Every structure is written in structure tokens, then in C-alpha cells.
Amino acid sequence: MRLLSQSAEDTAAIAAILGKELVSGDTVLLYGDLGAGKSVFARGCAGGLGVHQTMASPSFTLMQPYRGDREEVYHFDLYRLSSPDELYFSGLEEHIGGEGVALIEWPQMGDVEPDRRVSVVISRGRNEQERVIDLMLHGMEDRAEAIYRALSPFETDTEKQA
Image (cartoon, rainbow, N blue to C red; front, side, top):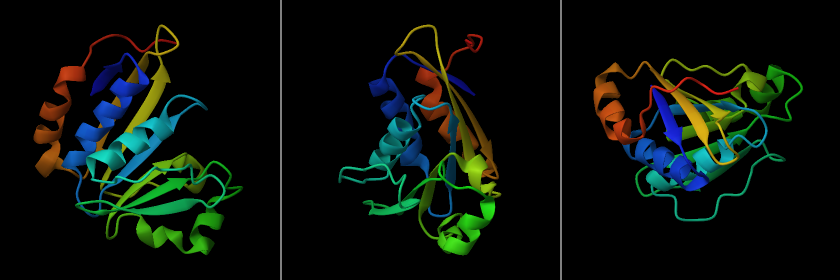
């Protein structure tokens, strides 16, 4: 599904809609260049899960836990990993695909790809604020229709902008 965001507020709103549909055991993998909006998406998603506190970037701690109204939320930023083994040896892997919902920025750095996941690729659009968001569900067939329907107001058929 391709979504179009006209602003950071749109990106957060899209993510909040998705967050309301997530359940314990789900993982959201966030891909995109630096400054693409991965952290904005993570905060919006956490808001949809009922996290009310301010979310700081977990860049220097790998993971920050938050208590949402419905689920525990684990926000990962794997940008600084030098190898996937660092995630494994940290013991934080247990929070991915287990209890709670994991939101993972830079998942490719930790070679993370659980069976039940939402892959989100955020790309810059035609101007500074616009973002093209490609969203794919894996292992969530039972909820896919409801999730896609909830996000449909932002759906677009525009080509991805370079």
C-alpha cells in the first residue's frame, strides 16, 4: 500500500491509525534515509497505542520501553549497531515479536525481520514536507483488510519520487 503524507503531522496521523490496529507481538520495521521521518512515524504509532509520554530517540541506548494504554511499546533505534550480533548479545531481541509492540528504526542494521511485521519505507516526496510511505504487512492476513481500510484516506497511486 502506498500512502502520501503532506507533512510531519500527516505522517504522525498515518502512524497513529496504524498504531490503533496493532496488538501484542506485532513489529513495525521503519526504513528510510536520515531525516525521512522514521522517528515521527514511531512517535505517531506509539500515540495510537496509547503512549502519552514524550518519546526521546533511543539512539544511544538501542531501546526505550514505554507503557501504552493497550500494550507495552518498545522503541528501537539500531542505527549505531556495528553488527547484528550486538542486538543478539544485548538481550533486547526478546522484545521483538514477543509481549508488546516493537517499533524498530534501521532494522537492517540488526538483521531484524520477524514473521509478523509491518514494513514501512519512508521516502522524500516532491517537496521538503511530502513523504511517500510504502507499507507492507507480513503474517497479519487476519487483520490486513481492516488495516488497509483504516489507512485508505491517505492512499495514493503516485509514483515514488526520487
